[in-house]
Image 1 (tube, rainbow, N blue to C red):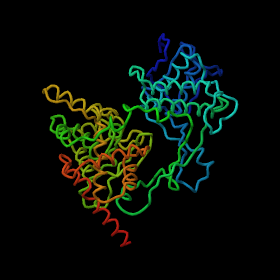
Image 2: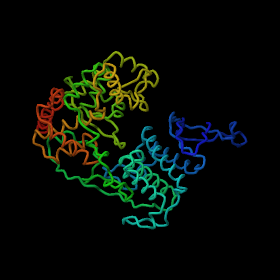
Image 3: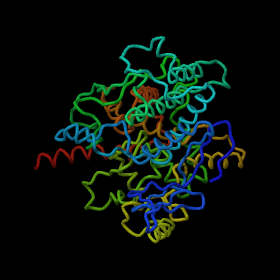
Image 4: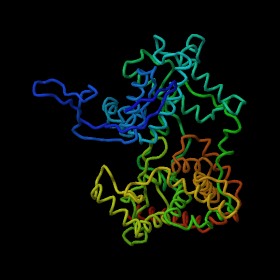
Length: 496
């Protein structure tokens, strides 16, 4: 690999092998075998090649780059994870949970972390600081005083806060981006501390249980309750630190309700009347977002093993569930509407899908656990990229420009907001309380912030019944069988 001559950190996408059982090659005499660059040759018992892994490179920060690259590999493989394992398995003790592997990250998430660490490394180089510079003893839970505010991580924190707060739009950093950057740095410090590379953490850290006020009761919410919830004793367990960007710095431009909006009936009509929205697979991508609240990368990750025909008699009692990994690397069993499951099943029967399925199974064989059969497959027989479904809106906008029509303003992610808004509207009309609706939305949408959920409830309150518009029939299809399922579930329980 030819390394670039640069004064800033570079992210180099390269192929790496993170397989298991590495061993060096030796001659019969026991002398190491080297390649033409005098590097010891080696091999793995089980290969695992990632063709586009992000490697950080800076000619004057080689040690930091080595550490950060190892950190990225450990996150990718799940060797390091802040989430405690088997939180719901009360029969296991803490020692057993501690030795279990964490959740591996997908390559897109690793690339995102690499970008945040690149920003930190560029700042360190410009500031002339070292991330190894910490204090000799752990910090208390109290706020940062003058002594520790001079440490590099806190100076970087101040730098990020100033960029969030500035009125200069050319220098301004969004609140969410700044929060993600400091979170990546914080996690890197924790990893370094556990490895013994830094003597202590330059910030406070504790594992706290955050309470959710919600009464457990049978009803609509219970239908969407996930079997493997991340809650325990009525709360969510999370690592909490004083190293974070204060919310009071968030500017109006960062407000979620300014950027994220549900589609209006007029906008939905504008979208679904396009030629693009009538074609496969664009049509099914849009339906996944609108009828299931799925993000673009979640749609690409759906496997065919979860898909079935809900109209078959033997599937009458079977609740449609997708096993997906959501934002924040949360594996969930997501309940979806039967109408959406039917659309997904119909997609598996298309001639084009069958051709691409044959290509995939020829390449990876049938029932390969390492490469499960995707629902959405590209022309090469591979799983579609994570951005493919979201690119549908860009294609729609190109069609509008070509035809001289008004260009659609809403995004693909706004379809998810539309789904959540109509869920909230339906529950409001059924007389559900706001706390119950919030709990249902958190379960369906996998939100971490209660404020985000609150926005959807506020959107729903501003929609009148006759404003369902293009969504009217779908709303009926999505939720029309909910009460039937609840009655069926109650009858089955009584019979048993």
